[in-house]
Image (cartoon, rainbow, N blue to C red; front, side, top):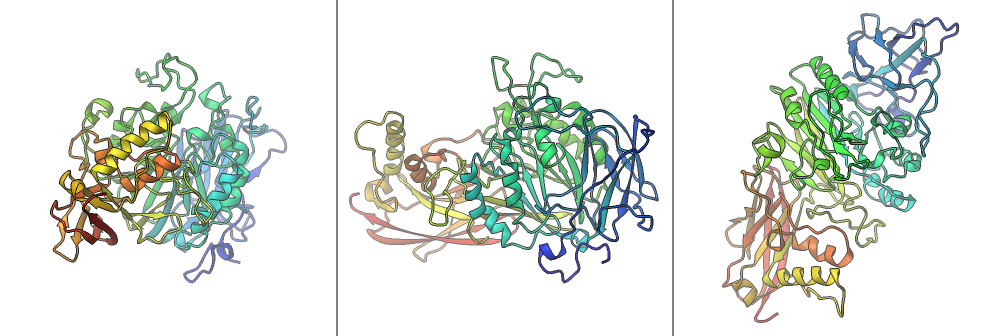
Length: 596
């Protein structure tokens, strides 16, 4: 069979997937130089993962040890300096595919840790022994990764704490991905918190990725830590042993994807860094804690990696903790200390950053700004899009379990569980959010924010804190009294991927459309928080069934209902238009009564 992972008319992923592994050639006589690792990137003609004499090497392919970045010579050969606890990896070039294992996990790296990890609860990295005489990276040609049209799935916070939640994921977002076939080239990037602290669940996660239809890649989150590691050097050893390097890059089409480790653990504010800055930590008592940060070694690698990337390519910067986050802007564990430096590295490039961690959806565009960013981050406005991708687990698998077998898990911003997809053409992209169990046309949820709702919000929150007597009930949320209308009632539209450039229009009872107003336009204003700015559809579930409370959102629009609406049934047709002109229609029926 020729070394091609697919064809223009390829069938299912399982029929075309290139399965294999990195070739590690062990030294026979102990003569390999301990200070240099050599190897080859080669075209695996017979797809056996072994570099045969007749299989040519591929020149110009990037290989790294996590510090240095080199390009293979015309025969596919490379040399890299050696250090203990390094991970050597190849950057998959467009037009080629690295192998995947039986669980569809991409195979493109080798860990070198001769004595193995220190004693860790979940094992870490087993002793790798002496330096191999060669580490060779097999590739096959791929029309799928060559195509200028890519569909890259970005999966936030799978975060299963137990096997029950593994099943929720299987029935939910993973089941959706098993029925999709548009991401075979770019695959799925799971952007951290792959599990919820219990790293023994990684094999269960691999069973889930085995159901998907493309390469599966991972980057680490704060719940993927070896929490018993005493130094940052070993804090992700189990993750590295079972899933992926802590950071790396790969190419598909005209896209360069950089998967970063944005979690620093343990975070030690008492130790100055080489650059003179002191990291912020989330624990005031200086106990082991984590922070959003790139260590100096990774930041230096990022500079070297980007220096070898064509200027015309779209650069996707992915991390668990985002470069910055709107909802949690004041928290050191929800931003990366060096956000301004990463922005500087990407000047003049087409770029987008994607992140998870906050279990919310944020679609921030170039030029967006919020009060305090200058003081907190050292930037006034965004130079390129920053997207928080939502979560497969939603609000940590909270809420009522549906008849489909997974919880509603409505998020703190009113978002629903799901996955993000970057639909790429050339070096341009459009973001798409797919709600678990729904079609891509489901992009909004509608509700009424009435004085009666706001009073119930306050009463129910107080009752939840001190539950005495009968819990306050909201009643029918779609019934509005005349007093409600007189006291300001808004029709709310939570447009999950809504952003600057999006519009929401409402047509009441077949009349002329009226423009709703975005509650958080991101034009330098402070966060707007509380029942007046909340999503009633989400809160009505959350205050009853548990979970976070959607008391703020950067993607909520409101239209004030006329005080003179007549008694009886009314129909609101809402058209949400995103920044690319794509339209989504939703309908809310409500009733006006004399008294509620």
